[in-house]
Figure 1: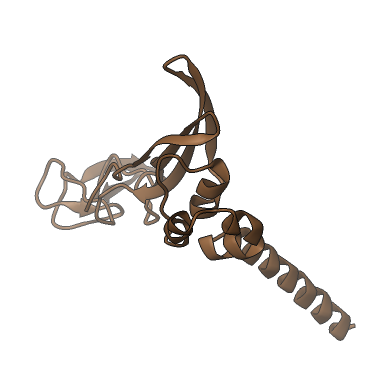
Figure 2: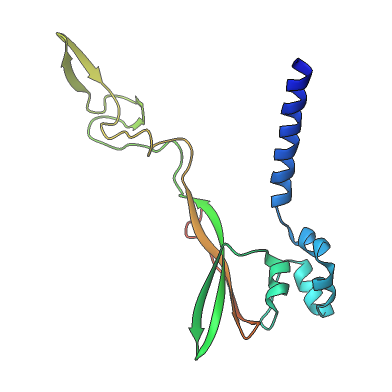
Length: 177
């Protein structure tokens, strides 16, 4: 019985690991998975694709080999021609140090649940007893979590017209440390 349960857990873990690892696409895995597309490129385009770079004039297949599948595709119009723009999304965190400091009335400052000095201690009465709370009166455990918020931003785009790349951009993250 224990052996059967162990084998089920092991099989499930192996299947989950295979799913995770096969979903991670790199330039090398795309090239090795589609050598016919790679071989159809010129030697200079092969060199660019191998380095994960593109140029104007490349086909969508070449851009896909270099950059992978886009997170979004947007149809548009440029100079009377229909276009398609591929957008690639990356994630960054907001440049706060953790935990977030609270600067409020009183002496010293607090970090979320604790306080250094007296940060405007509040007196509360409950059941005939008096309680004094120290720390931020605006503390929100969801906002002040120790897990930094993940902020999506577009980090590169490629625009195609008539089956060729007409422009591309590398964008700077919105927050730098």
